[in-house]
Length: 278
Image (cartoon, rainbow, N blue to C red):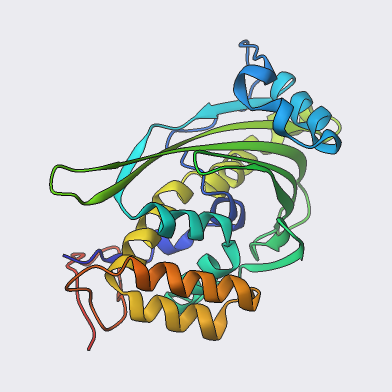
């Protein structure tokens, strides 16, 4: 049965969309008492030297740390990796289903700039990629709509992925995310006391829904492969090579009985019964 899409799930903001992090619990905006050895958290020896120091600093001297619970969902590993590695394609699929102010552009291989239309902007890049581990480094800048609150920080996100098959042969993905945030804003302690609820919501909104979002998009691509290929080819701000690779991956892993239409976005208050469009 094809998955439904609710408008709440389409509200994922830019960092969550790009990173694919799943952090369902509340952030605690306080200095963590736990210390981490960066070399035990990420493969430092495989991260380029120009990123190694800053990644280590954020992990070692973080302001906020969170590790999400594992999420398992039916999806072929190649489809999943296409969505994680090509965020411009993922964004195009998302924006075809619901209006979104999110903007994203690739400024270099593996490096992106984006804004969520609500005061948050980020520059981020993959500093390490493998089928089972993605490490991303991001700089975040947020200004509240009235301009009375500003947050600047750096984020390291680690997406760990595993792949397996059910007894019926259906491919599954399991992933979890660990996030380290280092707030760089001056006068942070005073700022936290005065605008803590705003900043807490910004940080939470940026990341908490994205793991669910990636799993949802993976299921939608496999359920509606024709739609996914058409949208990626026509609307994605990605290279021709990336679009062609995505097309080949989707076609090669097409499920029998896949829908020929497109997903339907339903209201959160309505019963989310899956519907197919011809």
